[in-house]
Length: 506
Image (cartoon, rainbow, N blue to C red; front, top):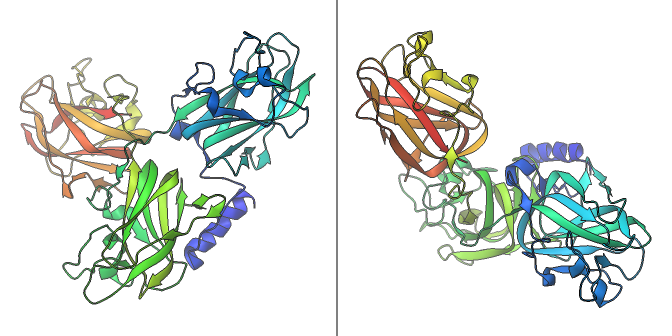
C-alpha cells in the first residue's frame, strides 16, 4: 500500500467506519521527521564503546578473530583480532546487527572497510526492529533504500538518513562488496530515554479536555473528557466516557500535543451505580500526525490487551516496546454491558532540564516579523521593542507600549515551530515614565488561530509581573507549554501597558 492510498483510506475510515488502517509500507510512526526526535544527534557508541560487545551480533563470522565486535568505526587489528567484522560466506543474506537496548532515534550511519586488507562493502541496505525478531526494511519515497558504501578500506563514508528510524535494533545488509564482506560502522542519533515513567495527566488534568476526543459519545454527559482514570459522576456527567454505539469501530483518543514516550496504560470501567459497564479487551494505535495511525504490535501481531473484569478495579499494562507518538487511541474490542471507559497513560514528556535556553527574543534570533501585537502607541513603541533588556535608541522607546489600556491587548511570539516553553521573564519600560505590567495571562496555539489559556491544576494561571520598570521578574511555566505561538495578555498595569519579555525552553 502506498502512502497516498493509505492516507485516503484513513480519511474514509475516520469519517465513516472509524477503524484503524495499518500503513505497513509507509511506516509513518516508526520512521519520522528526524528534527522532531533528534535535534542534536551524536555517535551512539560503536566507536567509544558505549555499545558493548554483547550488543553486536552478525549472521556469521569468518572465525572468532573476525567477530562482529570488530565492526566498530576506526577499529584496528590487535592481539590476533582483525580490523573489521568479516562474514563466513559472501552472499546477500549476511547482516550485522546492533541492539541499542532502548528506544533510539537513528539519523545517520558511517562505514569503513577492513583495516589492513582490501575488503569493504560497496553498497548495503538497513532494516530495523522493536523486538529483535521482526525486521522492517528502511525505505525512502516508498522504495527500498540502497546506500552507497565504501570504495577503499579506511575512508569513512557518511550518510544522513532522509527520515529517522525509531527502533531498538538495526541491521546492516551488505549487497555488494570488494573481495570479501568486511566492515566497520557507527550510527548517529539520540537515545530516547524514559527510565522513570509517570502518569501523563488524564487523571490530574495536565491533559486538558480539548486534548481528548472520541469516535462518538452517547450524549454530552457521557463525553470523551469523562474518560479519565478515577473520574466520578458529578453535575449530570456520568462516570466514564460511553460510546454512542457498541461496535469495534469506537475509540478514545488523546492528543499529547508533543512527541511523548508512552510506556503503559491503566483502565477502569464506568463509576455509576446504575450500570455495570466496562471494556474487557482493546487494542492501541498511535500516530505522529493524527492522520496515519499504526496498530501497536508484539511479535508482529496486533496486541490485544486484557481490560477490566469489573467497573472499579484498575488494570495496568506496561508495553514491551515503548511507543513514541503524539496521538494515541484505545479501541475497545469486547465489553460488558456497554462501551464505557476511564484510563490513564504512562510515560515521559520531553524534558528541558539539561537543555533550557532563552528562545531568542533578547538575542535577536526571533526576528522582527515573529513578534506582533494587538496594537502599538505608534511605530516607535512597536512590538519589536518588547525584547528583554531593550533600551531606547534612534527614536524608539524602551519597550512595547499599547495604543489603548484595556484587557484586550496582547503581545504574540511565533516560534516558527513546535517549542517547549518552560519559563518567562518580564521587565517594564526602560525610558520615560513608570510603566510596567503587574499581572498577565498566557495563551498558546499550535496553528495561530485557536488559542487556549494556560492553566495550572485546572485553573487559569495569572502570573505576577513587575513592580518597577527595570527589575527582571522570572516565572517558571510548569507544566510546560508545547506550542508554536504564545500570547501574553496584560491583566493589570502601572501607568501604561508597556513590556519587555523573554521566553525560555527548548
